[in-house]
Image (cartoon, rainbow, N blue to C red; front, side, top):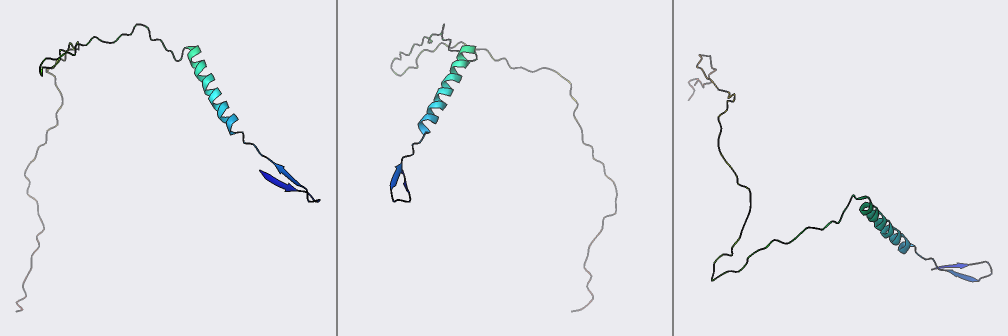
Length: 109
C-alpha cells in the first residue's frame, strides 16, 4: 500500500495488487493446452489395451524356494578361427661407446 499527499495535506491511499496469480494460471493453462495438443496429434498416447500381469506362483514350503518359470534366451559362447596381424618386437646386440665418470685422487691427504 502506498501513501500519497497533495499540497493541501490530503492523504490518498493506493493499494497495489499483484498479478502473480494470473501469471501462474496462464502458465498452467498453457501447459494443459500443450499436453492436450500432444495427445490429440498422437505424439503421446495412452493406449493400455492388451496388458496383463504375469502369473506367478509364490507359495513356499518349509524354507524351500518358490517355483519360478522363466522364459529367456539362451546365450551361446564359443570360439572361431581367424587371422589377425600381431606386431613383434625384435632386439639385437650392438657395441657402442658409453661415457664413463670417475674420481681421481690428487694425492692430498
